[in-house]
Amino acid sequence: SPLIRAPSQQLGPDYRPTEEKPTATVSTAPKINNLHILNQSPQLIALLTMIRDKHTGRADFIFHSNRISRLLVEEALNHLPVLPHNVHTPVAGRTYAGVKFEGKICGVSIMRAGEAMEQALRECCRSVRIGKILIQRDEETSMPRLFYDKLPEDIKERWVLLLDPMLATGGSALMAVDVLRSKGVPEDHILFLNLIASPEGVQNFADKFPKVRVVTAFVDEGLNDKNYIVPGLGDFGDRFFTL
Ligand code: PRP
Ligand code: URA
Image (cartoon, helix red, strand yellow):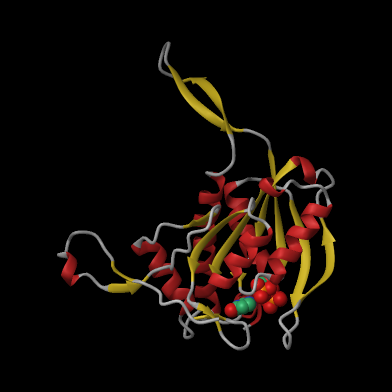
C-alpha cells in the first residue's frame, strides 16, 4: 500500500520564535478508536531520533529505547481503572482524596524483541508477573509462527500489558492476542505497548481486535517490500540484543 506522508512540526520551547525552531517529522495520526499515540514532545522525538539513527551503537540503543518504553508504560497505566482512595497525610487532621489502581496486572512479552520492554515495566510495577509468547516472523514470507507460550495461571483475571516494540504487518501481535483470548483474557483487558507501528499494522489490529488499546510512540509512513517499517529503525531485536 502507498506510503503515508508523515507531517512535519516545529518543535521546542519558546526560547526561540516558532519560525526559528527546528522542524521534525512527527507521527501520522490515523483516526482509530483505542489507538493512543504518545504526545510528540521534543523529548520523545529526540529519543526516537537516537534509536532510528543507523550509527547509534548498541549501548545507546538500549538506553534510549528503555526510556521510550518507560514513557509507554507510564501512559498505558493511565488506561487502567482506578477506585477512590482517601488517605491521611502526616499533617494533623488532613486527608487527601486520591485513587488507587483496581485489579491485578501482568506483562506478556512477544519474544525476542518484546523482552527489551520488560525492564521498563518492572521499574514501574515492582515484582510484576511477566508471561512469554515466542513468535517469530518468517524472514521470507513475513508470516508469524508460534513456538511457545508460558503465561500466569490466573491470566484471565488480570489486565495484560502486551509488549512488542515493532508492529509491522500486525501478524505477530494478532497471533499473540489470539493466544491471550484462548486463555480467556477479555479483549478489552489487553493493552498493547509498542514503540513504532505501521499504518497497515494499526489498521489490521483495529479491524480484528477493536477493543484492544494500542499505546504507541509513533505511527510511521508504511512498509517496504520486505515488510519492514519505513523509515523505521531496522531490526529492533538485532539492534538491542546482538548487533
Ligand atoms: C519482529 C518484531 C515483531 C514482529 C513485527 O520480530 O519484534 O514481533 O517482527 O512484525 P509483524 O507485525 O509483521 O508481525 P521478529 O519475528 O523479527 O523476531 P525478533 O523479536 O526475534 O526480532
Ligand atoms: N521487525 C523489526 O524489528 N523491524 C521492522 O521494521 C519490522 C519487523
